[in-house]
Amino acid sequence: MDNNGKAVVEFENVSFSYDGHEVLKDVNFRVPERDFLALLGPNGGGKTTLIKLCVGLLRPKKGVVRVFGVDPEKVKHRIGYVPQDINRSKEFPISVFDVVMTGRLAKKKGLRRSISKEDRRKVEEILDQMHLSSYRSRRIGELSGGQKQRVFIARALVGDPEILFMDEPTASVDPAFQTELYDLLRQLNERLTIIVVSHDMSVLSSYVKSIACVNGTVFYHGAQELTEEVVTKVYHCPVELIAHGVPHRVLKEHR
Amino acid sequence: MAGWIEWFQLDFMRQALLAAFLASVACGIIGTLVVVNRMVFLAGGIAHAAYGGVGLALFLGLPILPVVTIFSALCAFLLGVISFRKPHRTDALVSAIWSIGMAFGALLVSLTPGYQSDLMSYLFGSILTILPSDILVMLILDVVLFIWIFLFYREIMVVSYDSEYAQVIGIPATAIHYFILIFTSVAVILLMRFVGLILVLAMLSIPSYLAERYSGSLKWMMVLSSIFSFVFMTLGLWVSYELNLPAGPVMIIISGISFSTVEFAHYVYRYKKS
Image (tube, rainbow over all chains, first blue to last red; front, side):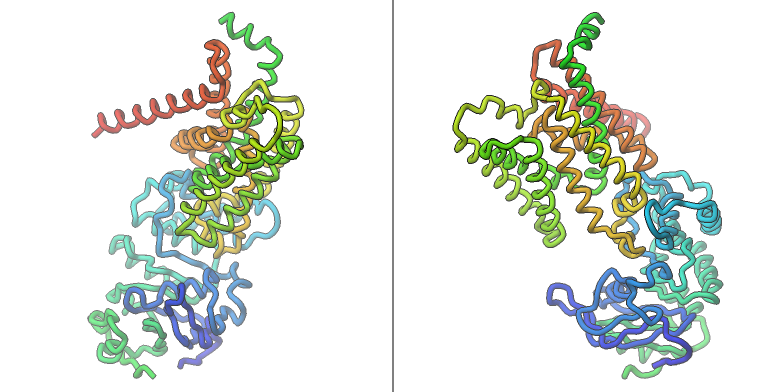
């Protein structure tokens, strides 16, 4: 287990089940500060469940989840989250600007949560960064899948999170933007910890610092040490691409 | 045209118009929230089960409006619990409460001695039964609704659009959903005098559905939906007066015609374009 630096996310003997069906069992791992962690694993392996436990959407049935050393509930204003499902109700009358603005609300307290000039400036800035400025007044439902995904990434980033959880953020964006996004994430990674669920190893392999294989249990590979042989031990990990075109990485055995 | 003026000079019509205005404000706001949160079926459950409150009030000889308000608010709460605990069987359980509430009301009414002449008015509405005290109650409920929306607009918007994300950023999504349900029961009571408990669903869904298409934000959807409600209700009052027909059903038919016309126009427009 990697113990370099402070742990920002800790799982201690965490189990989780949906209606008696156990998805995660005795999960133990720590994510160090400023890690860039990719969660890999088969569908139904528990990746999304893991992310939801981290952001406080689900509570563990057993064990403890800590983010920044405390219950995730207490640090919501420091967390950024990009959900997997970006097809919220399509008819909903809300502009791109307003969707992104909701990302600022976590930091606000009290009644009315009024929006300041600073908030607007932040939203404009992030819209620009995500190439969404010209869509700011558009209804969210009129956007393409890739554009929508950028809106949800913008919403997560606009609140200046200290840790970012992303559940397949590049599933429907085009390859050009994908590269750009990961470049941006690498930049952000100098300040914040990033945990991302993704199937796309070709991109991930050149950006991530560590990998966790999630399939009922979690195997955390801290240092850069990936080989096909080891990861294949976790059923269906999409390994074939990991060592493709990048310096060879060697993972430790799952223990 | 003379008909309009004569019509407007009638005292009870002026009172009905004022009441229609107050009811359509609530109708626009709550209808919007019910539609965007996909709670129309739950609203149907509340509206029909509220008939149990009518029966209870008549049976106990208590004033109708307060009893129905409390009764339907309790039903709303119960329906809320069900929809959160059993999200995949909500429709089955809502249907049960829908019918049980109505059956309870029907039983109590039949057990109440004396002739209940205005029973149908609760089911299909009757503007003639609107009392000045009703208008005061409507006004108070509108004010409460306004204060709630004013204070929590952003929270309500986030929860309605993406309740999962609302939870992630620490907004109490469940509490807001309960509030929407409770206020739905309030809107049902406001509209009961006009269109009755059975027809109220159309007033909560049609104006808001139409408004959604032309609104850029939840706020404007509420405003536009209120305007549509007021237009439908006013037209309904006038047509029903001119043709000597019951106002509630006429209001609903007018909403229905407007709704079908707009839908058809959009269909033709899109067909021509492609």
